[in-house]
Length: 444
View 1 (cartoon, rainbow, N blue to C red):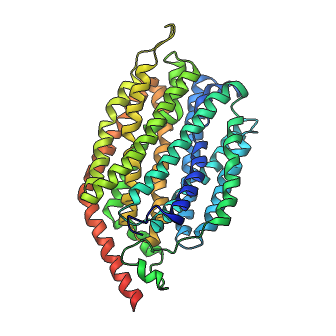
View 2: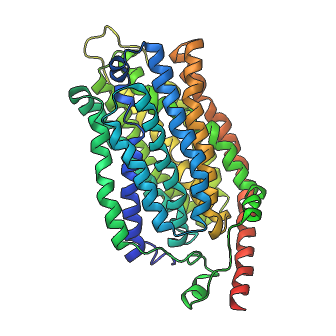
View 3: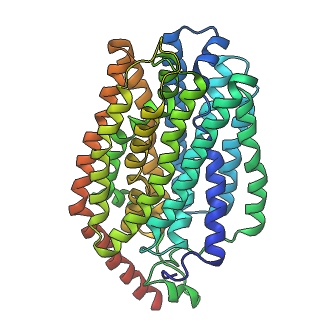
C-alpha cells in the first residue's frame, strides 16, 4: 500500500465508486438555495419567513438531526460490516431526497430534508473509515482530495441543476433528478466492492494482516472516551463549528442575495455561486495535493497550510460580499464577482482534505468511524447553527452586515488550525507507537 500502488487496481476503483456516490449525496444539500424565493412564494411566505424558515430552520434540522443520528452510525462503523451499513445509509439519504420532489407543504418539506441529512452525515464516517484502510498515511491527503473533488463537484452540479431547471420547471424536479443515480450505484457497489480488512494500510500491520493475522484493536466505550484525550482531535472539533458558519452564506443565502439584493438575474447569480463551487473543486483538490507534498516534507506543515489558507480566505470573501449593488444598472458586469468568487472558493477549500488526512493519521483504525462521526457532528453544528445565527443577524442588522460578521468566524478557525502545528506531530507519533504495540500483540 505504498506510494507506487496507492492508486491502482481495486483501491482506485473503490475510491472512484465511493466518490461518485458521495457526489450525488452532496449534490442534494444545496438544491434549495437557487430557488429559495420561488419556494417561499409557493408556500406564501414573506421575505423574512423565507430567510428564517427556509434558510435557517430547514438547514438547522438537516444538519443537526443528521449529525446526532450519525453519531450512532459512526460507532457502528467500527463494530459491524461497513459495506452493509454504507448501503443502508445511502438508501436512507436518497429516498427522502426523491420524495422531496413531491412535497406539497412546508411540514412535508421540513421533515423530508431532515431525513435526507441522515444520509449525508452517515456516509462521511463510513467513507473515511474505508479510505483509512485503502491508503497509507503518506497518500491519504490525496485520497481525501479526490473525495473532496467529488463532493465539491456534487454541490456544483446540484446548484447548476437547481439554478437552471428550477426557474423553468419548478423547484421540485431537481430533487428527483439528483436522487435517482445513487439507486443504481448502490447496486454496483454491492456487487463489486469488497470491504478492506481493518488496519491493512498501516505500515506496521500490513504484512501481518496479509499473512492472516487479525488486527486486535476493537472499539469500546473506553477507547471512545480516549478520542477526547488526543489534542489534535479537540483542535479539529473546536475549529469545525466557527469554520463552517461562513459556508451558510454560500450554501443558503448567496445565490438569493446576488439576485435580490445585488440586482443580478437568478441565472447570473447562480453562475457566480457556481464559480465559487468550481473554485472549491479545484482548491480542494489542489490543497490535498499540496498538503500531501508538504506532509511528506514535514508533518507540521500540513496544519500550517490549513491555518494560513483559512485566514487569507477572509479577504476575498469580504470583497465578494461588499460588491456594489447593480440594481437599476443595465447589463451589469459580472467579471469582478466571478473573479473574486473564484479566488474565495479556491482559498477557503484548501483546508478540507488536509483536515481529514490529519484525523486519519492520529486515530487508530478501529476508531476512525467514530472520530469522523464526531467530526461530522461539529461540522454539522456549524452548518446547522450557522444559518440560524445568520438569519438572526439578518433580522438585527440586515443581510450585508450579517454576512460580513459570519465571514469573521474564519478568523477564529484559522487561529485554532495554527495551534495544531504543535499538537499534530506529537499525536501522530503516539499513534505510530500504539500500532507498533498492536503489531507485537498480533505476532504473539
